[in-house]
Image 1 (cartoon, each protein chain N blue to C red):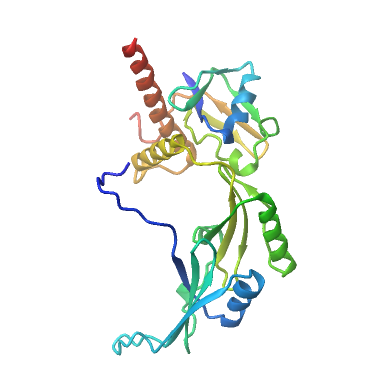
Image 2: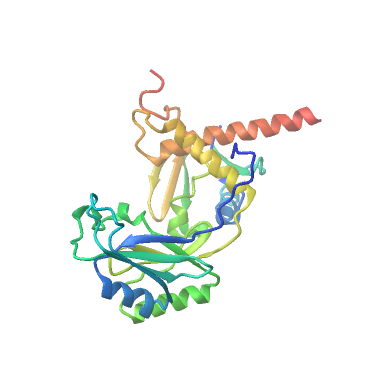
Length: 205
Length: 92
């Protein structure tokens, strides 16, 4: 729950940005295969900082809808540092961009468009509140297209608070190794919530 | 009182409906947003009967558990009562 009394809000994603050492493939993928309009490009001689030895670069933006952009930096004459290569394995998939579509038909159409262009795309994966397809861009960056299955309700936020509260109790604890321990810790919080609600009902009588 | 909690949202409703058909489970009324499904002995939940997709299935205890998992595979989940502490160093 927020402790900030003033109303200070963010208004959605303006852009995310990633480095690329595959200029041609990246433009082909986003502009030609996905069909995202190329809407803006910056070109600069470094940032003018001599000491930093910042490479000259291109910075270009594709329109991903609803006033959001996905952008790339191309640093001229540089090699991709090993630490910026997308690692294999599921953990690196956490670092991803997910775009929203409205309908199942749209999600199917995206899946088909990508598959027809030779992109390896997952089957539909149904989560609690969304349904998604997953794929990677030519840089290996993980991408997702998703549709909402239902609105998020107040009870979802309550549940998320209890989840985080239970997790914070366990974080750093010796021997926390699995989700069963977490589910049990959360069960204690949910029971306390139910007990409080039931005793409130008794008091109200 | 052993059991598990299910958030009262459509995503998990079929889990609750499935429990109503299991004589080993007692499904309590929704309180403060959660349904408590009580059991007194080991129970087995069949994923096909719950109609849950795998991604939701493997998160179906996210409402909380008072018990232990004796088996969790893509097809079956078995839960049982427990007196063991949550963390190994508790209870010493």
